[in-house]
Length: 205
Length: 182
Image 1: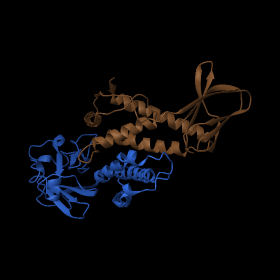
Image 2: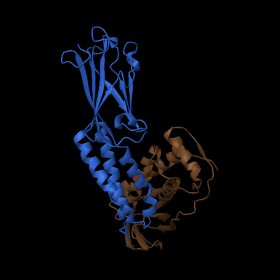
Image 3: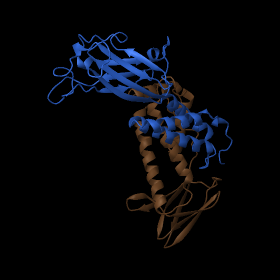
């Protein structure tokens, strides 16, 4: 069996994506791992992360040169790749990653360029929603200001409840990699958040 | 008085569960006029979800967090607790995120909680108690506690809202106890 790449991701503080190679070493219980009879880590000469940003722009990150991972010495449990905002957006300062889908191709080869017969590719999606989540939390934080008439018909609470429900479904879509639904729900949340509900006088009193 | 915030949140979650259980029991017996309780619980659900998850650049202001916690206290009828120190609130949220414990000082008696209207009742066989509560609203929460040999027990008699200041509570058997109107 050939090398079977595996990646785990975390978004952490939302200013970077952290990818951890969880392929592991070859063994009788991990036949897709690094090492003989599969490709050895020290043989890797081509390792790239090709990231398609939510905007559609493509960023090619050379793991060896840009992330300074030395495959001649690295061990399989040290393959951690931090993709910072600066790196992904060519900016000089850190910022929150824009919400959306980051399509990532993890490509490995023991030749200087990708080749159909001698390369290993893993495609994965990472979905971030920090900005809209913060927007929904901001709405929730304002409930005490607009929930004063003690009525079940409070318009601000109704809108915020809907946003909260949409956020929960967005998180579920992210967890289960439902990219189509994620994009659709994210767009709706962004649209609703763009309305200025703080001016509502319709509290249902 | 020192209050551990984790304990506070555990307590509010327990109150939330009790209120939801109360709502469900009202649904089962077909009580009308529970929409205010439902709205309160939706708001509480959002607060309890959000508070432990606040972090980073977009976290709320100290004033917003204080308002949220005080709103929680009011909705859940938590007594004698009001968190007034906004610096402490910020520390609280940070520490919740880091899953560590912190003690809250500066606890004072809550000053914005609207107390319930409370009355006692007693009757035999089928009887109806008319309560004039002066809450001046239709969406009231009615809780009835019946005296039995173990003390006061929460019961769920039929409730009819007559107008903004009057409800009728219908009992099908001999009973006595207290009625709370929120």
